[in-house]
Length: 173
Image 1 (cartoon, rainbow, N blue to C red):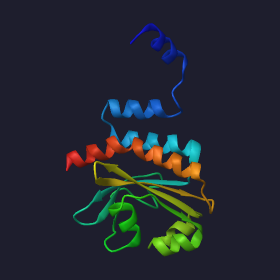
Image 2: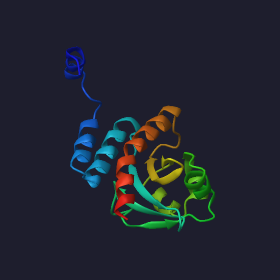
Image 3: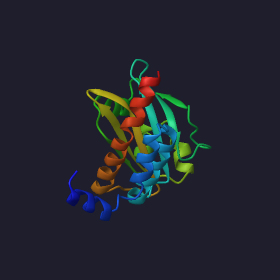
Image 4: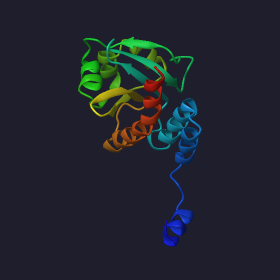
């Protein structure tokens, strides 16, 4: 690294939260990395619930690794997504799902009553993909009924930050 690159790095602050994510990964603390990713994303999304799920493709099932609200959505909880439009779009086709408003939440999520009781009105579900495999999803639920293109972009970026965590959980299996 040349002297100019060092001086630029020294005066350019890292984006909020990135250092916490990097430190968690440096010590192989997946749980701390997911907490830090949630905090990092919150600055741009203002979400009220974040969950991270590992995807078991053979069982077509997602298993919750992290939840910002463990009382309502405890880690370890799982959902069968076989034959669901959401599972096809997000897990099989590996495309982001955006649900806006109570009707969309009701249509796509069996736990729509719990979501409504938490005051959540929109969702962005981002598949985390490595190669051609969906490893899991990072999910952001907001109290507002609409999301913007910038929200979706910020959710995608935050989900990319979860890739090392999901790869680590895959290797641990």
